[in-house]
Image (cartoon, rainbow, N blue to C red):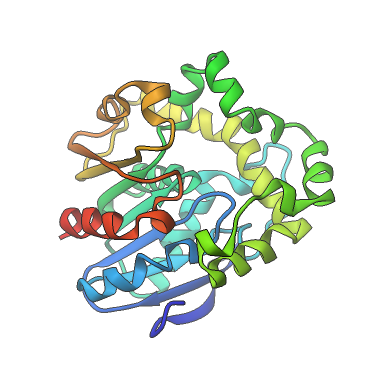
Length: 285
């Protein structure tokens, strides 16, 4: 994976991040979701390099081979604000003061927070398979709770760690055939590390608390995404089932947003990389 990319670890303050980066041209930061690592982009990143971009694929703090941070009572060490701050410092260390950012799943919440907190550094924003956490919770009904029950299970103290670490392969499903062998190996190693598992659970605990509070504060202050934004959603996931027109939700958060479906299941970068690369390349020019 990632032939021709530099693979290194960068100290960004509270955390040390594992990052792969390569290419020449406009910089693009790709942020993975749960429970993946930066290797989820292994079928996308080289093609973006071929299309003329510099591509940066980190493992977020607490994920993959990046370091974890000791939990706090309010879980803010894994807040999207803290993770976004890491990534701004990472990009600065790599020589990028202004860049595009694309995030998938939990990574889309980080991409949104990064754009809202650091608008001067973000040229364009791409969010993939998610709506803001506060919007999802405001619309939570029996259908959402049934499909996304793990949001609430993972918020419980102690129990999720014991359940997941007892049999991580049963909890975190994935196959090398679907994911690619190297990507699957990294995913499996991460999900078998109890410290990483705890950090990934803390991501969800922060989501229901401090992250939601930050988004609600944005709404009260009318803090919006002012750069061009793109929303991509998987046709075989449940964005349309849950929200009807999910793009309408993003229009409440961004001044200039467009959207497109991707024919795929949830992990679109792994399942339909050609469509993802085409959408990103066109938008990020």
